[in-house]
Image 1 (tube, helix red, strand yellow):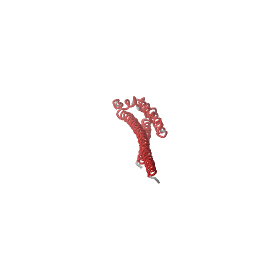
Image 2: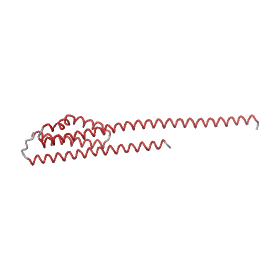
Image 3: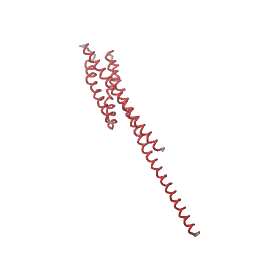
Image 4: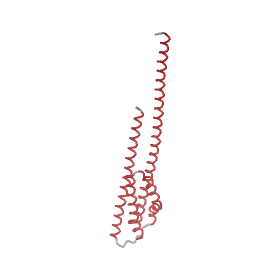
Length: 193
């Protein structure tokens, strides 16, 4: 083998190694860019879910506070017959439908939570129709104490079911947050490999 041929072979080998090294660098760079893109996309999606979960949590808590105000105001008035105690009930009555509508609109993407929300909304409307309205219509004039007590107990039972629905929604939201956290952790683990 001549000296010239050895140099050519050496140049070819060197060129080949440089080409392979360049391909590895380009492949690695593309892989890193793809990972960053995917992570950014996932993080944006996760941020949107966190914000959605926060809106759901806020809507649940507003409905819960509205229900407590309704019940507290009506019970306060029933015990004292002082119309000033109706203020929390009246304030809650003015915003009830808006708060329920917001919760329903937010939860339209989760069938399980939507079903719980629908059931709770129906119970709230039932409580207003079958407990609050008849109680206020009587205007404190009790003609049948047994019927009044029965209505109070029925109202308390309805509110207990509403509170159970609210607790169920809180639990479902907690499960959703936990599942999303697990998904994010799994993806982070994949990126670190």
